[in-house]
Image (cartoon, rainbow, N blue to C red; front, side):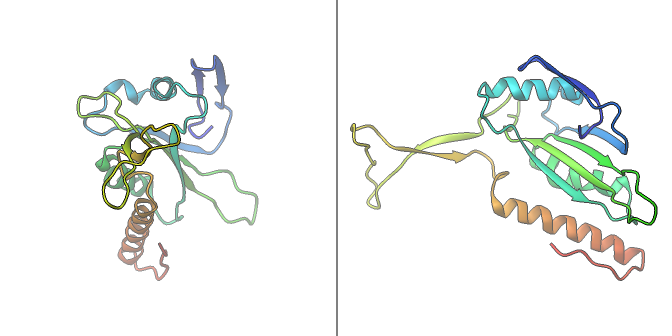
Length: 192
């Protein structure tokens, strides 16, 4: 839907066709240096993400929907993706929409960004989203359940899912927009 393309999901054996969707100005994938080139192909990327999880209930990606100011260009969106997401090691699937607007309506250009939650390792293979660590008492002793087994908790292997990371991304976007507003001599400002 976001990219306005036709994709076959080999995991579910389904085809989704959004080629008739209007308003898609741009659809491209941005890769960190360790990502294999095959991930430039959207169908290949998202099929691999689906298969690597192997659980129908697994969360596959984070999705960001961000308004674009009418005064700004595609280059700002690309710069944000490269500097804030790809630089952290994320694969970013970027789509920019500029839907047709009804007469006398305000334009609504916006971008959709999807990033797989599972990180890539330096060799380009998929890493772990989280690891399990034993729960310890305040004095450092392992906690056991009723069956006498160690109790574990899951810890994310990246900071991508943290609230603080989202706040950093929002602040970075606001700063980039405000710098451009200032350069253009406009008084508008964006809050984080």
